[in-house]
Image (cartoon, rainbow, N blue to C red; front, side, top):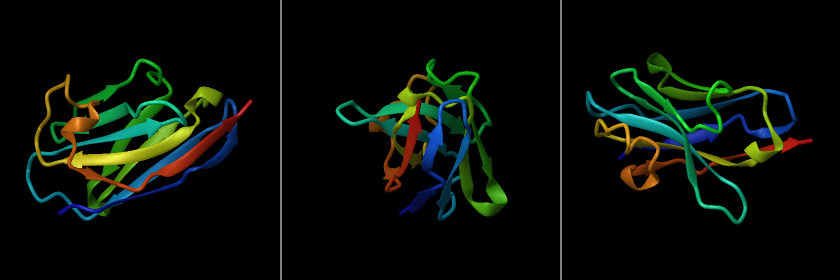
Amino acid sequence: QMQLVESGGGSVQAGGSLRLSCAHSGYTSSTYSVAWFRQAPGKKREGVAGLRNTGTTQYADSVKGRFIISQDKAKNTLYLEMNTLKPEDTAMYYCAADRRLLFSYQLLQENYYNYWGQGTQVTVSS
C-alpha cells in the first residue's frame, strides 16, 4: 500500500506561480509511474503531468511550457511547479502513483493508477 499526501495549494492571481508537493511512503518497486491530475467543479478529472521511473515526462497540452513535474527521491516527494497560472487552472489537484511502468498513452489516464492522495485546492483569480 502506498500513501500520498498533497500540499501547497492555495489562492493566487493569474500570472502567478505555485508549487504543489506530494509526500509519499516510498516506492516499493523499481518501476513506477506517478502523475498529477486535476478536477474542476462539474468537469471530469484530467491528467496534467506524468513521470516514469525512466525519467520521461508527459504533459497535457493545456499546461505544456507552464508546469513542470519533478521529484526528490531522497525525500519521497513529488512536485508540480505551476507557472503563469490561469483562471482555468482552478481545480482540485491530486497526485497518483502506480507500481507499473505505464506506456505513454496511459500515463495521464486516471484508470491506470492504484494509489491516490486526497487532493489540494488551487484557485486562480483573474
